[in-house]
Image 1 (tube, helix red, strand yellow):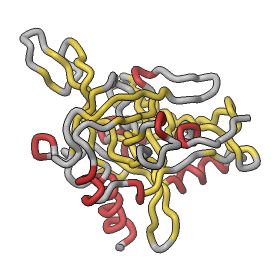
Image 2 (cartoon, helix red, strand yellow; image 1 turned 90 degrees about the horizontal axis):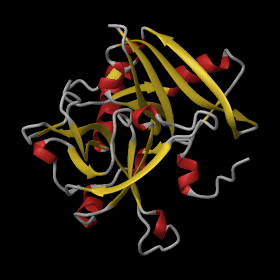
Image 3 (cartoon, helix red, strand yellow; image 1 turned 30 degrees about the horizontal axis):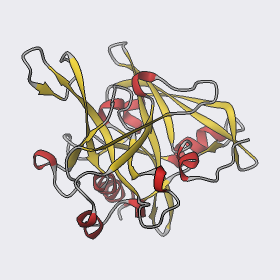
Image 4 (tube, helix red, strand yellow; image 1 turned 45 degrees about the vertical axis):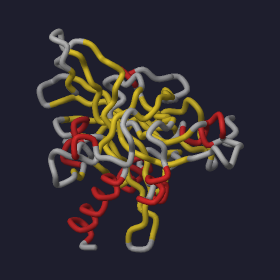
Length: 265
């Protein structure tokens, strides 16, 4: 049994693995995570990932850790296969925003039919930094992200991979005029959809140094072409350890559009 006595341990249960079969028959993998907000004055958790992870998927397979007596049952996997996968998600209305969300209630209902419950630790909307908090951040800040880089994970214990890095562009600015920023870290395909946190576990017990904020969602990795140019696509040759991250505020914005379109709020 794992003792959930640190933030890092709790975040092990924030993500879930997404495997997809695309409409052309090819396969893909990515990361999703649990995110909580309030709609209609009640908790309303969502699964969050990238648009590009799910929008062309015919079938999706979600993998979770089961809950036993309110605690995570390590290694007890719940798999949920979903047909017509792409159409189950709600996408940000701006197609250039690489985000998609799915109400967790739909997942819990389907899992309940298996006689099981999912264990998860959702991050809260209040962890998104305010503009005042962003102004206090340094240009160089430590970041941590959880996910399944290149499809790698502990498939026995159902654990994601934890990676660390730093901001590569200031969080106060929108990179290239979009609500995005860069991180200096080893980001690989499969990390798409990983939540990114401003967090330094080395100072977890130092109130003066300890910060914890949800700051974004990994979208893509930059590559270097043979000619020396860089681009955030998989068609180039060599990764240069820079990840493109959609700012956390856009997750909140996507949920706002969902509430307007689906709930009339």
